[in-house]
Each structure stands twice: as C-alpha cells, then as structure tokens.
View 1 (cartoon, rainbow, N blue to C red):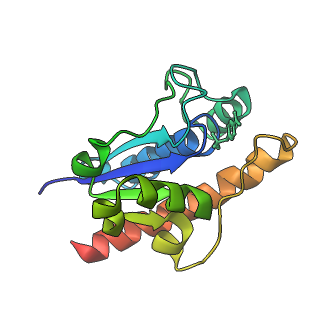
View 2: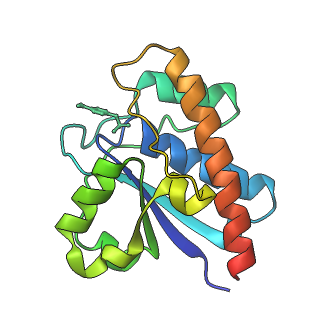
Amino acid sequence: MKPTRILFVCLGNICRSPLAEGVMRAVAERAGHGDAILVDSAGTGDWHVGDPPDRRSIAIAKAYGIDIANFRGRQVAAADFDAFDMVLGMDGRNVCDLRERMPAAAHKVHLFMEYAMDRDDDVPDPYYEAEEAFERLYQMLEAGCSSLLAKLGRAS
Ligand code: 4NP
C-alpha cells in the first residue's frame, strides 16, 4: 500500500514542525507502521532556510530518543501541495497562510490538532518561551501524532 505523505508546517521550521516530523516518524516506527507514512516539514517563512532545528527542539527530541539534529529548515513550496497528501499547519495562522498561498489545494490543508484529535487547538509557538515550553510541546505533539497514526489506520 502507498504510504500517506504528510507535511508538517510551522512558521520557522526550526521549533515545532521538525519536532513533529521526528515524533511522527518515531511513533509510526515504534508501532511497526514506519512504512505507512512519509513525513517532512517546512516553514511558511524563509528566515531559517538551511538552519538546523532550534537547540531546545533537538534537546527534547533527544531526551525521548529521537534524533532531529540533521534536519535542515526549508520553506514550503508550490510543489509540496502535489507531493503530499496532507499539509498540517501547527497553528491557525499557518493554516491561513498555506491556504492563501495555494487556494486550489486548500482541501489538503488542516490544523494539526483538529485533524489529528478533533481539538480546535493551536500548537503554540514556543520560540520566545522558556525551556519548559518544549516539554509541553513534545507532549502535545506525541499525543497528536499517536492519534493521527490511529486515524490513518482506521482510514486505510
Ligand atoms: P517555529 O518557531 O515556527 O515553531 O519554527 C519559530 C521559529 C522562528 C521564528 C518564529 C517562530 N522566527 O521568528 O524566527
């Protein structure tokens, strides 16, 4: 069966979406469903193109056995809306920006927590927050990714 192709998108592609990418891959692999998905991440902005993830995202991922240190930031591109089955924005602003950028593919764009967990919640931007925010971010992403994996299983 063809894997479901998922693109996680935030603003900078250094804090939330690379962590979501790493967590989603780990959750799927640990459940024995690594082949069921293809994941990537990108930012709506271009400030961090080519940069590694924020050190706090690298550290929290590492604490949970996930290595995202080699990821590099990139900006979402028009081709992504063809290349992925779903484009999941971390917050409402990401979702608006994505739909505005590619109105024809608006049906592929969803708010991550809403799509994954039926919860109308943003994954808050932790960039200007203290270290603790990254533990909360990790827990939120793990819950969301686990729920998303279960949802994909039911859909197939
Ligand atoms: P992210 O966090 O969208 O989760 O990667 C941010 C990273 C950088 C900036 C904003 C948010 N920034 O303004 O540079």
